[in-house]
Length: 346
Image (tube, rainbow, N blue to C red; front, side):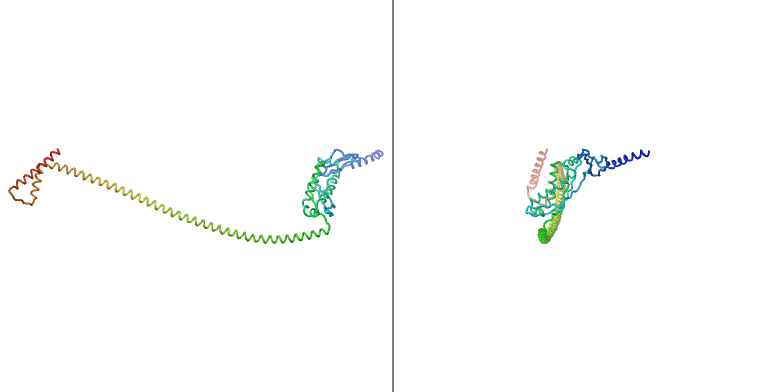
């Protein structure tokens, strides 16, 4: 039994070593790529523990999350022949999981050396060679990161690498000391000029503020005056309207009084007319009745009575031989006329 255990002990040891080298781990944010006999295998594993054949299969973790590649000490010469150096350029990029196998197969595990590090050197030199120091260091430095990102992304898309350039951060290039001092002096002068300009702008703004304040004050006073004038005009209009209304009411009252007076006068006239008509009718009636009564009195006897009464009231005395005949003739003529009138009435 002891001999059997001693025989199997090397096998157990070999199996343990085999198991130790066959188990491997793929980190989170990475995928596992495998080579067997130097050939890249199609299998790509996800994060976690996996098993492979030790000493035959090689494995590499390939990052598929955001990573930052830092390119340092990049020399370049400007179009004017000045040599400058970019101390550090940071490139944030990401490799798509779907392109891992194809990109690793074509460009190797260090694909970023080809498409990030070498490409940055190439693009920086292209940019510097076509621009002056003033343009690279001052005028177009703020657009350099965008230009680099655009150029690298276009080449990555052209070669279908699956690499996405997220952003690029470029530090200020290192220029010769003498040139740098000149730029510093120019910047100081610019700063002084800017300060003087800003002071002038402040003075100008203060003057503009004073003018604007005076204008606003004048406009406010004018507005207040206009409001006051409108109020006064409104009050005057209200008073005028009130007086006009009062006058109109007085006129209407006067017209109503006149109309009432006319109505009263018309009523009084109508009453007076009715009274006069009544009086006329009464007089007419009285006269008619008297006339009828007189006609009824016109008898020979009554007429004779009146004649005698008239003669009796006469105070004149006549003398002569024919006096009786005069009275008889007068009486006869009177009677004839009375009889004629009575005959005609009948």
